Image (cartoon, one colour):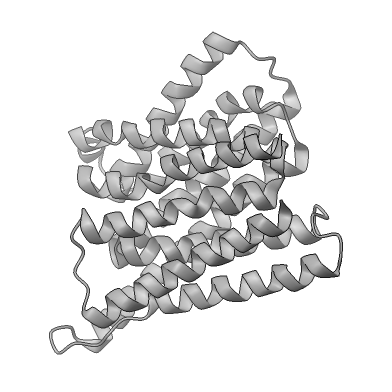
Length: 293
């Protein structure tokens, strides 16, 4: 069962890791992206519900809506952060934040660390993750970019992606805390996502929201929903720490996609920093996964 959970978590990584790259290729504002993703998640959930017809009780509804709200709020912060930082810089930071928060929750809230070895390797992995985040956020000063403007934009982006880590982590923690039926959880989560999607996009005019970019971004919701379907199963099979850690290995796809597909500009030093940081985030995540397995 643990091996099956690991496979499911890696499928999740492939789905979630491609979202940031696909969203940037499609284009549109962060409001277009979050609302389009919300529509896609709801579409997937409705089709899944009518096929499986799971029983949804009041607790499942409340847990699902709450976790959906947390996820969508976090995802909106991530889109905003990626606008400022770029995918190849922002995603490793967001991933590191999510791994640190969910790992600490798994250890101290859910008791997934049981002996001294777990604490030694666990804190070592967290230190590696933090170092990875530091390397990823390093930016070389150039004569073309005014220091004050560049620093302000970077700070705004970093704060946004760190907040995204909090929101997306709470989505996982709420699900784990109440352990509802994964099949019954999907539609209520979609309702929560849609509520927050409307709230997050309310600052943009209806004309801009009703553009082709919103509807093109529905594919983001389908990618997330497919990954979420596998992820909820993985958590029940392998635990929160290992499932979330492995699911975040999609950072490889997003980071390399930002550099190779989106052609994000980096100096030689920044490229080295990014690759080192991404490698450290992967190493920390793998160490957590191996430790729990």
